Length: 333
Image (cartoon, rainbow, N blue to C red; front, top):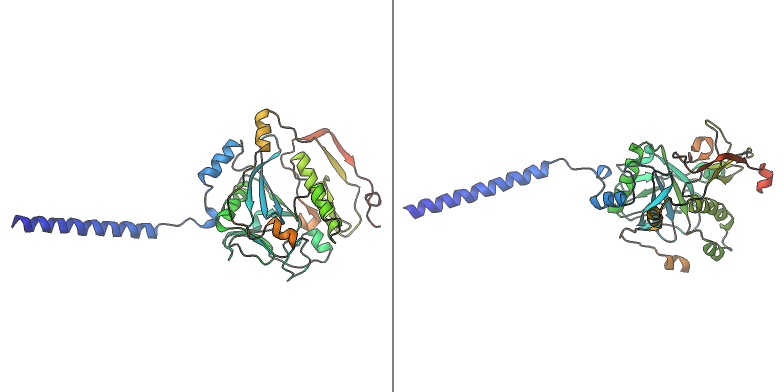
């Protein structure tokens, strides 16, 4: 009789345990899920930020290199300069080297773009995304068409820059926290390739070479100063490193005004530690559907692109110099 009672007690305990596990699983299933757009930055991401002396909410700057299939995130430190945070492999992009020109050409854009908080898309059908802002003032001045050009997830592209879902979540989180920290617009510079003199020489015969020379001005400015240049559009051209008076209106197809140009000191790290941080490069693991080898084988409303550095450190006390009239810049009158 005692054996029967013991067996019954064991059975009851087993049933109770199964029921408890079932309730626990049900509770987990019903627990609120964090949406992709609100995923917190991972512990390794936060540790890297701490190592580099960066604040979570400090401004970011993004550079895209099409041929290398890389997206870089740079982050401002307390000296007002931007330091490399991490390079992310671009899983896929469509088209070929060269800017987007018209709707349906499936080209990924190239140029100087800005992203405001309203361009963040937490409900994208491609996981999550942010809109590059194509066509910008320059694109519209050249009658370029197309819309909804994004950086998004899902690794599929028809004119966009597509990341893996995991990587777009981290990039999106970095942008989200920068907006919450007070950054109004994020500069995104999209290049055909790393615009070194050697690479430019390799592409000297390309029909877009003249356009790329202008993009190289923005690339070189950041390489020297570690501050994204303010860019204006006038006379259907990008004008790099200009001072835009507050509430100024510039006609993207009209003559260029006599711009003032900021005199910015070249970037010099303040210590050997900062020198090391400035030289460090971290690359996230991830898939690239297109590689360098495969490619070598085969304020928008006002005409202003970018708002200039919010951390104005590094601008020399000498103020500004005037640019010559547009004719002296080589523009047609």
